[in-house]
Image (cartoon, rainbow, N blue to C red; front, side):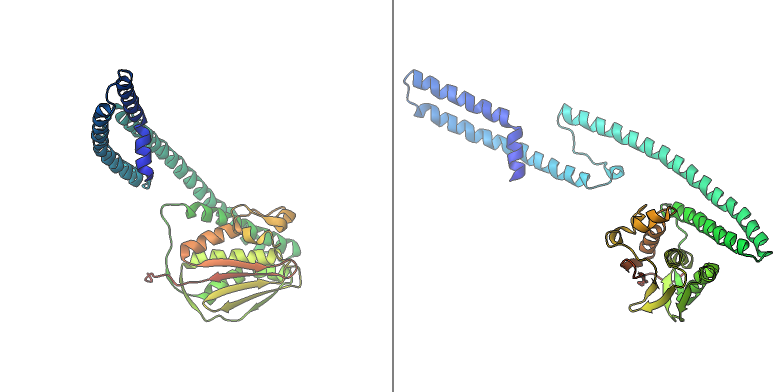
Length: 330
């Protein structure tokens, strides 16, 4: 019904013009005191013929509307089969659309080249900066003091930031390096715990962890990044003497619980948003708001989900549901 009203509205000038002529025709008969029926009958016939003449135009308009609706649902790159132009306006509009699409392709190509150059630059930078980091770590291993342990902890934080940069760059890359295999979950957790062991010791935080004895179909490197980020957050917001517990819930859900300062109720729904730091992050002054955002993005790519439960002064529980994907191990 809507398309009928729309079509009649577009033809309103012709309809109004016909009614105007009909009124003139009938008015002339009345002025000359001629039988009005002699005017109404041909007017009615003309009206019926005019309505029948509108039907083919309506059918063409409906087909055109349906085709344009289908085209509107497609990406711009696939908009090829436009309706055949029947008027000069149609042809002009299609030429404008073609010119705009060509300009869009040109701009997109230029932006892709600039983005590729930026990715290459930061990727090279991230790999190059690993060399002085490794050299500094070797130097620090030769000395065991409070200062060297503090510097080693800061160096680990730098390594994590570099890995975060690489992760951020790769997430939107057209090519990914995901390798899905059946992985032993304990192997991944132990790697993360071993790397952060210095922080556990230095901050005097107790780790409660029993072997999980679980297999998961995932990418080891990317899931390790997620687990390490979650453990790093737990260490950051847990006071000395606190406890971090790693355990497994059904169905196949890795849980990391801390006894830290917790998360405010207003912040909890937004902690996985890009750049959101919340009350704790603003107080810390060093939070980037990217760690948990990257964790959520990675989990989505791996077919997992990540959620959080917390309240102020009662700690936080991060749950990573390691749902199995319908994929074959490589």
